[in-house]
Length: 278
Image (tube, rainbow, N blue to C red):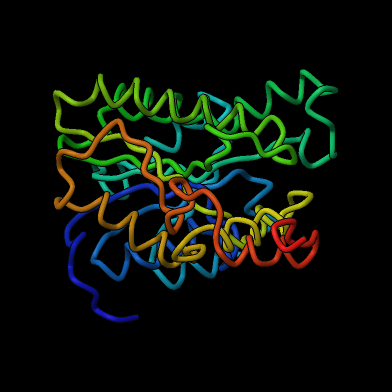
């Protein structure tokens, strides 16, 4: 691992959501270590059994603490263990998202509402729980930074993303609300809206390949990789972005501000024929 720029030298944090080496959270952990940070890694007990987090823990020297972020007592235990390992923390990454409705291919107009509650609890309300307990238990240092990973489905409808569209919208709202309340302590709260990324979680969404290709064709710079997202998040954890807060920051190669690409126009013309030539 290279020495990097030392942007996070002396900083400590909590990284939620790494599963395997394709995970954005995994790549962020490597980037944070490269930049000099120490941190604890956390994921749900079932994810720890299914994933490969032990390898990341060994590579980064990070303790691994199981935590179901829908349960207050487990978050409290995580915060206590974090204080024992690190003391206070300067950054938190929230890279948590899961929808039983998406996994079981339920249409948006026919959702299982118990599953919808689980989607919102895991993917959005968990950010509120984590910040609530981190503040209450005096784990968050002044001047810290919280980043939660989001998706443009919060603003635009992607049919196969189903109730995760709603979850990301709620996640971004919670980030703004908490950001306003933590601002007097110099603590920033932002969301990063990453382009479709070929992770284990992303590729599990029906129609993901189409979503990925569509975004890649329209974005002038193409889809950013997980490692490029990691570098961006490092800047948000660093002191270089001390006054950036309550923002939803699009990291998508310009997709959000693009209409249609010349490449896609040409491809559509080949398929449907150019009416102007008739």
